[in-house]
Image (cartoon, rainbow, N blue to C red):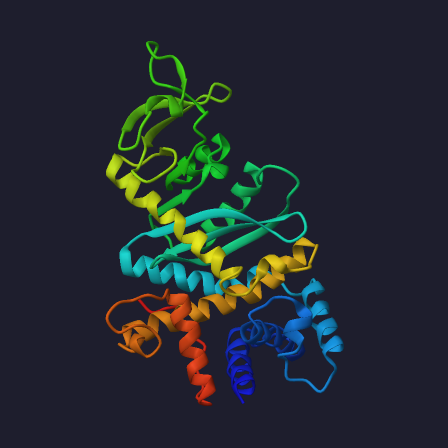
Length: 358
């Protein structure tokens, strides 16, 4: 049976990663991962229906719920080897680390704050935190705390490039990134104040361009009237966009700034895979941040498996089995998902790769 095969393969892999972990905790985690994979849902009552157990579905759902509530399950220690492997792999392949930071609203008044690794038009989860969302965005202190943790995972002497939306462009974050010698391209709101010189005085960023195709590049400028901080700024209105990109950066030129910032949308694709295109994360009924974080742990393990299998399938020349032969229509996520489904339907085991090879 496909579920049996998936379960056995995952048990073996998690035991390799967590040899000292209680076997019941490993089993519960694998039940959760395999159940999400086969049900395409994070709703525990639905996941329970895909779990191999003599117990009733209600009892299984309660057991999974207790796992998510178990404070002994330390999310970062479970995921740290996976995150470090991806970071090391990218450093060896391209000589730098390319990070994307973003947040998304999920569940009952919570926001998932995620730092991910840019990878082939998708993003690989590296670290995350859940914050109570009332109005607005996560705080600069919360963002710096998560970024600081990621910094402990980055290979030594690896150049780091970070891109993100306007939520992450506070002076607090910019100052900290400069102190760490990280490169960044972070968007600002168009009404943010910018100082160029005494002639222009303080102007809103959106004031400098007024139509598609225009751009303005300022070095040695200052943000903002409230907290004056020296930055370089690119205001770039790409054709087809509704408004200009107002980007703060410490990169040396315009073309490099645009090239790095274009990768920001890759994390949106990942969030789409987490949600309606994959596992319906937005439909979770969980209300507590620690439980949401453990649920994200299961989704992240599953996601990197699918990406890794998708990448391996493309490199092996087998993409045509699940995608069009004349052109690539599917993402690595979908290729991995369909390739695994195809193998399991034929009762063929699929190894649990948790990091794509360089």
